Image 1 (cartoon, rainbow, N blue to C red):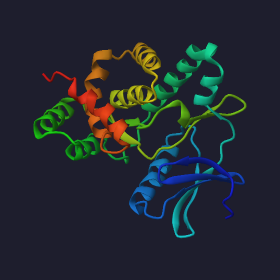
Image 2: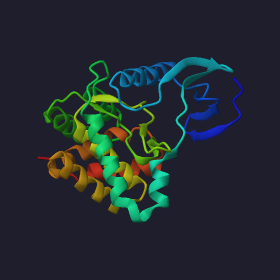
Image 3: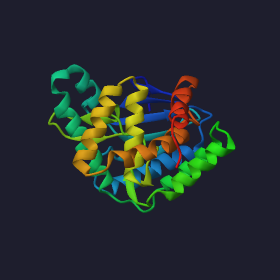
Image 4: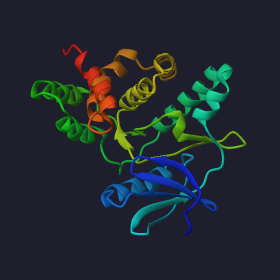
Length: 249
């Protein structure tokens, strides 16, 4: 492989185009277990029939782990939304419909969302009382087994020339409660400084899926606490502020 065509740079990884494939090359110190788990997630999601890039290989290059997938030609939904502000409602509807389709799928072999959040809350920079309240709230939430993307945002959706959407980046995929996935998307919009879009998204999702807004909001402190474990200090501070403002029952 000759990796010289960079198409994306992310924390701990760089994505290259190599012919008809996309090569996600991880940093040398990136966890082998996490790379293999991401590849396994992607393979399991392939089996649901959702439009996603298919895995071609898991390999090493210059001593670093890499996941090789088919390259999907197109534009991110994020770029399309930025370029066409007058069509925001139309694109947001497409985005929500796609997320609802993801949640309609099951993949029993995926890791449990509740188990993952339990571990993350235990690691969060919070006092013991708050962690206890969050664990208690998490365990009181209904147990579902829906496919949850874990990082569902417009930059992870590619729209091809014929209008077909493909969903990228399944590294955080779990099986669990769809409303936790929605809370995560809402917080991602807020982290990007798009609070009005976040509100609009939440209203549209709840309307289309017949989900009570208050139910999604109950997940927000749980999701914020679990996400605060990673990321930069500014993100951590913002996410932990969502935990602090909650009145526990």
